[in-house]
Image 1 (cartoon, rainbow, N blue to C red):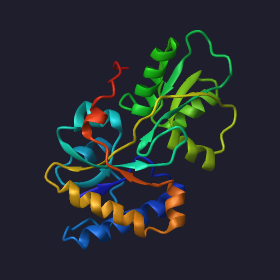
Image 2: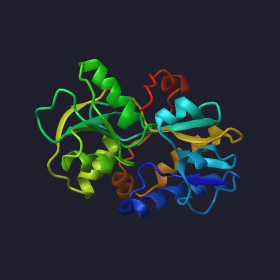
Image 3: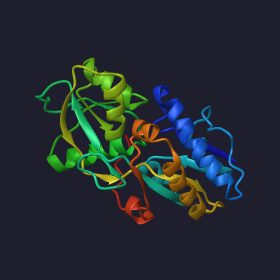
Image 4: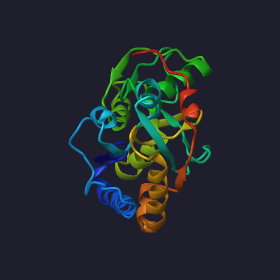
Length: 241
């Protein structure tokens, strides 16, 4: 079986992420589940999420509701303790290189299947009546922020937890936070269709309980919450880029 935590796996937090998985792995083995020694980091996330041997991973809300929800099971949702968000929810930070947007801003999007980088930005634009211009797909939230800071785009939306980490480690300049999007359920932990999601949920809670408090704080993991699949599926799917 395989396990992966690709969504916030920054090099600066590799040790804390590995410690989190080690605690989870040991909790699973104590319950008779042969969890892998280490996280998988050398495969495309889509391959991991759809692998029939998937034991544990984290995905994004948009891939879950658009393609994965019939193939995987929800385990739980992380609570990052984000301002303006209830437990188990998150939102996006809308960033610009100026406080005065052009009428039709060029946008940088990390991925066409990103809830925080595209779906939340589209929903915000519809809600506030802000037309969006040409799109550059950058490959990551950090690259989207750099594109805006460098003047290659006028606007981007960045996962609020990712923005915390970018602000902590990259210390970006030349960016203005102009808004935050409405909260939606946070990036869910999932397991394969053949696994026992209830046991995974118990092991996850135990792993967070025994994880060193400093490591939990570094990962901003305040806890985990059980959010029904229907809450993820009810979030609108944006148009294709």
